[in-house]
Length: 196
Image 1 (cartoon, rainbow, N blue to C red):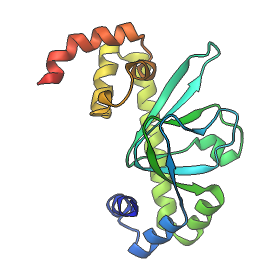
Image 2: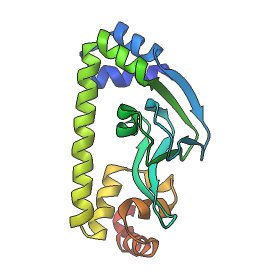
Image 3: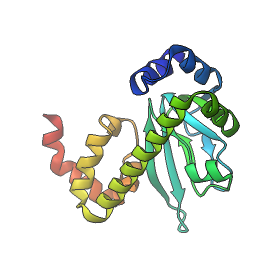
């Protein structure tokens, strides 16, 4: 499994040497998470940056009505954390759970910050990831308020190809901000296109 992370870093951060990648990897804890297991519960402090080597995670928030609202999916080869809780060491408003059994690398805040001191290229890479995630979040917010339900669905299947077979439709509807009935109608209307 370590090779997955090492190959990812070689491709996405070529400024890192093999030795630096090895040091980064060794600073992490490997954890296997069962399907439906919570990694972060609302009210807890997010203590880790996480890299998904295999599996599939979801970030969501539970509304006052008790309904969960999916904000983000993290399939294999994705980084995630609750940035505000992690950085400020404050209780999170969000939950992170495993939609499938997942193999993760976890770095505590202290360990990751120590890596920044010795590996400047990692800090630059981390800043690029944060900037990219901010861009993607703003783009998603814009689409949420401006796109039609059909356009949101089309964007979803382009952003997360193959994921429809891995998660319940209610989570997709939650992510898109539409009812399950609306999502089902859209899927039936686009079904011939999906089968091509």
